[in-house]
Image (cartoon, rainbow, N blue to C red):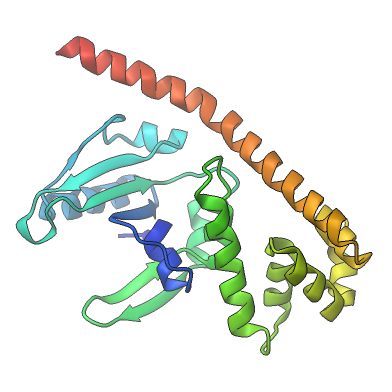
Length: 234
């Protein structure tokens, strides 16, 4: 089955610990893959616990399907499945960029790439923004002495701590100059204006939160319609 671990469990893998009882997956929502998923859910004795029901059309719209596992060894484990997210590429691109790891006692595990996880965490929820910062900082501190073009680009585009963005812009002036038109906080960091960097980062977060609200507004309406229909059936 083509699926990628994301959410809190993926955050733990990338060094930004987040306690989570849920397992979040992004999947390829084609017919064959969904059949494989149905088989895996049957083995876990997983049942849908909320709207929407498990249906490809809801996954294609961007909804998350919520399951609770009933099998004794995984009882009450919650599984959330998505196939589409705001601000994140379609699954085939995510699959090409995935991280594959071998976990003792589990085996091979496919995990959403760090930049894609960061993009997926840019939501309207208060708890997600500290995690975005921790994810990027964990990578920066782990590999600051082993920079690559891909890492430098990631740090400049995603660091959310003013002091570290100022440091990165000074350390990589050519790359920062190339990217400053892409991200306002980089331009402020190149001018070494700490206060301007702080303001630009705050405005960037506010803009992403608003985009996420706008994205979810029609989807929340759809969920309410589904809840209403489910209540009428009972």
